[in-house]
Length: 195
Image (cartoon, rainbow, N blue to C red; front, side, top):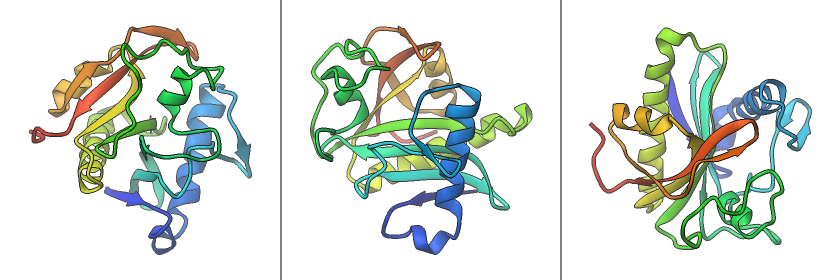
């Protein structure tokens, strides 16, 4: 099992890893969860998949096991910035605007974590190992990009997993019902070491 962080600068060195990750996102978010998202050629993408973002993939023998997108909160692409802020500003219909208790930050040391998934094909006995590999690479990549914290939307009970994997994760907004899930916006402190 490997964990790789992709960027527009390095994706050419990793063969089909990037399109395969977009296909795995399609399988997770469009096929399984039935989210209404942009798609082309069996790949899911959106306005936040720009050169400013990074994509962390856990993979083995060419198969995508898990992934997450990292986007700087300073990103801009047309009217869009990053998903949580754009939701708060009312630019996204699918995500409630009251997802944060405070104004969404715009700072070089704060990045957003989005489109987090573990592929359905990952056996339950292997899921924790895959999640730990994904979180470890996500944290290392975010730190290397200058991030001291991440914002993300996760299922309501996921902070328990965060504690099991040694990350400092606290709610940054209320628990909300959307996309057929109870989810919460969280802040992940990257200052502490992973256990």
